[in-house]
Image 1 (cartoon, rainbow, N blue to C red):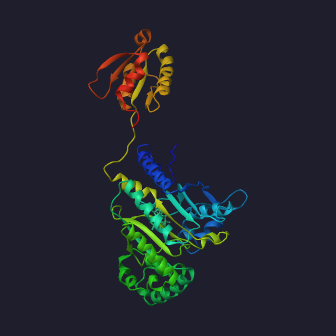
Image 2 (cartoon, rainbow, N blue to C red):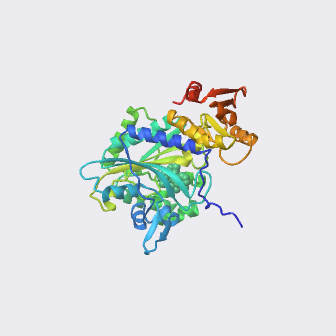
Image 3 (cartoon, rainbow, N blue to C red):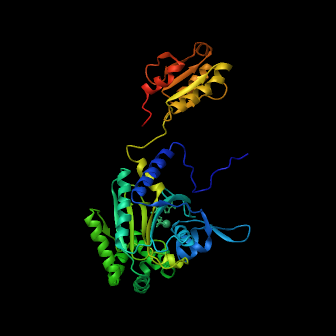
Length: 425
Ligand code: ATP
Ligand code: MG
């Protein structure tokens, strides 16, 4: 029979890679806790309507990337393509925004039917950070500082920050008309994708990576020149706060985001070390979304980190955490010794909580079990045979050093292991 394979664009994360993921997740959790953010775990499936309303009908995500299906009741459900909408839905549903703000985060899988390639998958993972109920540039600055601290704690360098402001909905509408007028006049310079977007999502054309359109887009009207006073001073204050904290940034007037809900501040963290998929984090303000989803109007801002891309960056560094081999490997020969092995192992685990101990399992003679002990990369083999049972000892064989072997009394085995290993690291 033909073996069944995983779905295209959906990867297994093998045991050799999970230590890097864990370091990333643990570091993120630490940093977020330090800034007073709390974890929320929303479901992975939501009503399709939630994303249609929030992400927006004309976006790539809603138009062609969602995993949407009818459940057995005939309700249209969608595997979340992003989770800002879920976080907002949860906060509104549970009344968490009444009279106060919420700082929330979530880590989990997202699903988009995209063309799989390096750094772009159909199931991928995001760290999502959202601050709901805060209107000012201070919280935008906090999110950016938190991001910068995360990169620094992970030891990542060469990540640049680009920021822009998209203004209010009204500004965006007026700007859209200006932009469409300009781009229509230059239609012969646009590629096919951009021509299509001229009617569906013209702002997104600015985001095009096609070098042939570079000159045309560089000369296009800029949204930062159209901002109202409130948006302009919010954006200026944000820049002043970032400068005061020593954060380097570049204003990129062509930075727009792929989702409809953004208003005001938007930003991206970008690296040049990953080829075409260089955006490792994107976010911004979405002051209209809470109301759109049915809550009382409340300002909000947030960002999402693409974890696969950050893991790839970590893997290109020098200090990559790997799988940790066991300290010791117990192998027992003979029926009585085999019965005793687990009792001995459990006593060691009770006494030494940091101990990584493998107990040999399965059939095989002594030679084969020694081979398994070697393959486990354990430092010590703890051998239990008839002689050892009779004498209440264990033979400890050094598997990495000189290969020497010595008999240790069962009663002093815990102390012998304590003397040899530092279980705190
Ligand atoms: P891109 O421009 O790379 O398509 P995006 O604007 O669609 O990104 P967002 O929706 O803002 O991205 O998601 C935030 C982050 O999630 C991105 O910066 C990226 O790091 C990551 N990301 C988005 N889509 C994917 C994907 N299909 N596979 C892996 N990571 C992704
Ligand atoms: Mg995308």
